[in-house]
Image 1 (cartoon, rainbow, N blue to C red):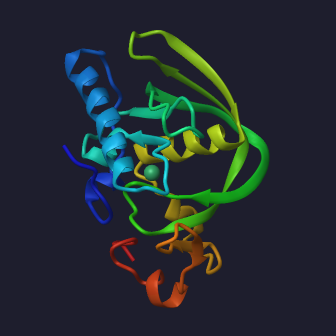
Image 2 (image 1 turned 90 degrees about the horizontal axis):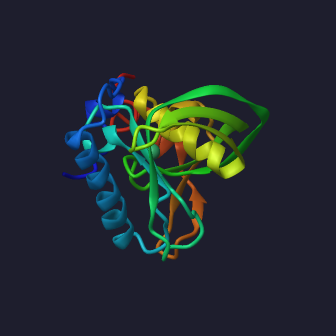
Length: 190
Ligand SMILES: [Zn+2]
């Protein structure tokens, strides 16, 4: 199991619903937790906030969300199965996003700041989540993955929206014309 990156076509597929939460599904979730933390060990300036199953090449509707997005020492994740956005509203705000599957590129992505999501937990319990701000953004980013959408798609034509990380961990603007426009790795269908 490993994290796949653009332009792997599995990142662009619509994932299928989980019908039964069996051992195979629980194994997928365990692998996602492990991969997220393995990735974090190799990225000292970043926190692995969340992940979607297609990012390891499994096109099933499963995401995991870090329970504490601030503290690297608290490394637990909640898994959400078949998560669905019931409503996204509130102000649209831009903020930085990165993705395990889009290496070295970050973006200022506009998202709604309020979201309602319904999903199932690992034990089958149905939950409804009301989220705002960072958690809302994370949920929208991850649920996008289940529909084959990446954060870069939302900012594709915005020359000011792309960033990269320097070796000190600071985000600096990317030369859009050189590195983004017509980049087949990011946008293979163009
Ligand atoms: Zn992502």
